[in-house]
Image: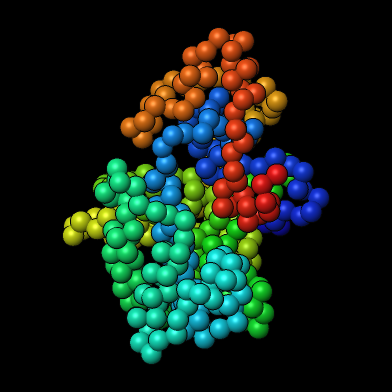
Length: 349
């Protein structure tokens, strides 16, 4: 357990598994619109859309590439083949991990090959109506990512909990499940954790993919809660209570030969920032508690009915009479777990 300001944090135990949980994505959804967020992410119901969420699909595919390169770094630069094998199988499955890796004499070729195979063996496939999020574009982005990251790997090794135990934690897609003030459960996945050789510090890493990496994108991370919430989680996982920094590694899915294609920047979170974040966590939890079991009664925030250039999938529900809403609600489908939820909670329940 650690104490930050007036709040306590600890990793969850078996006795905590009955508690409802929040995550960064769930919090953002509930605070965007309580009715939509609570139905979609707390009661896990939705109307199956006729379109694909290509931004999310492409982001998930590229995150597998990012994980693959970090695993390769553990294998070749940190010379831990057993850790590489165990965690590759953890993330990709035994058959896929084995099929995707081919040893090569040249390190760059080997790393590139592994990332390409992971990308092309995943679930993503091209959509004829989207010429940005394509496998060809993601392969080009993969080349850029591998080249940029290989240049700094020597001084930024992946954090390893125990070099003698391959099943111990490593800083690659590391999930956390923590309890705040003995009352709120918060889960998530940290993309990377690295040991910085020169400064002898541990830094978190967060990968982002986007079609735009402009100044507003960069500025949003000055206050964005995702790295704030990951900071105490990183301290708990590593045992290092001095972690403050998160390095954001952002790239466009489609390279455009501009300075925005690949960007990195570091954000720091002080203890007072973490305490401010907890206030928002508590407020979100209060909404969850207030409307538990009666999510149709939660307030609508209609400013968000048009998000990401598309109408909210719940407009028909919210526009219907209260009587019809109950009928529509009962007919809604069950939302599958996110990758973080599956890793922490197991198969969909």
